[in-house]
Length: 161
Image 1 (spheres, rainbow, N blue to C red):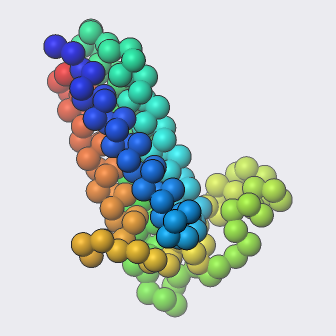
Image 2: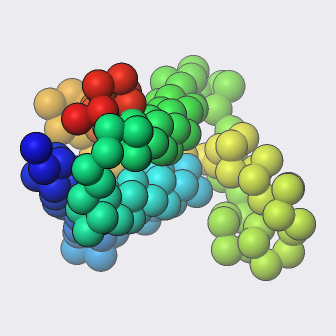
């Protein structure tokens, strides 16, 4: 049985998610925060994994399980980032991080390890909830999406199909 349809669906979903993120940024003018950018990078990574799997169309169960492990691992990273982002958005106002210089400034002036620390510490713009759908913010939707990809990766890892 071909696994291409499953990889195709995963690729299409990641494409739709990135297209939606770009729509929010360039049409609705919602500027992404550092954690949003990390979430996008992880979605793009998942999209590349799905595209490679789609083109490769592995026949052997062991290789399919390896793809599952990679998808699950990348999704766990996404869950961690989206979880942190959601947590920051739900902090009381007096405990929220303040707005600072921004990601471009950090990348241009700080060593990589400090940039990573600052990204995960969050910034004031990471706390702002600029959009909601069905009561969920963008990071909360990201959490749901990453959980879905994680469960799919786990299924693939356990069953191999």
